[in-house]
Image (cartoon, rainbow, N blue to C red; front, side, top):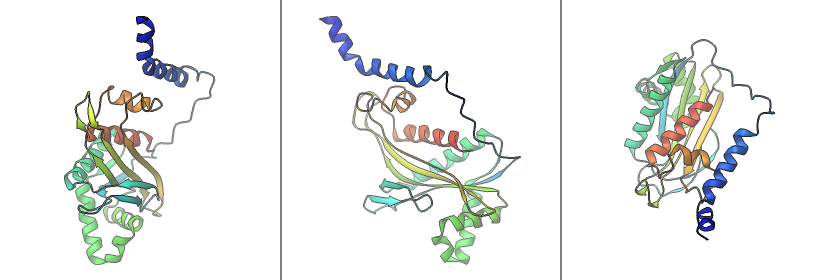
Length: 228
């Protein structure tokens, strides 16, 4: 009876292990997935970074991303969070190497100069990013929006409310203004038993309840790993 009870209590972890085995151990006969091509030469990337999709004081509502068209459940995000996430983006991309990365301060200066000369340009996000890149002599511009930043209530081991974050990133080619890559991360952490298929997030958090910052950094690393 005790043995049966023990097995029943551990079924989420046994089920997760089985899924992990199926995902990793049974792919031996599949052809390898070709890697995405790297940048040719040394590309110069201007980091515009993040901006909040909703200003403080606005009511939460559904928002469409101005660049990608993706839909998010959005809430106002504090300015200090926007600054921290922009810094995290810059530092992570710089550490990755392979490209010349221009800091967000340069992009902000270019934006201020362009917007003061033509306010209509500020209403055209993709065109504005292209013009920022031209002004800075960059090949690419990386920018995104922060849609949600809900902090965890509780501890690493027990929560009343789990962390929830959402953001997007887009890579714009300066020569033609085309978005050549886009990514999004929209996640509310759940326990393994609530979402057995999201094993990657569970393992990324060490099996504990993450803070909003840790969850966001996990998402940022995922998106940058996918970016060409």
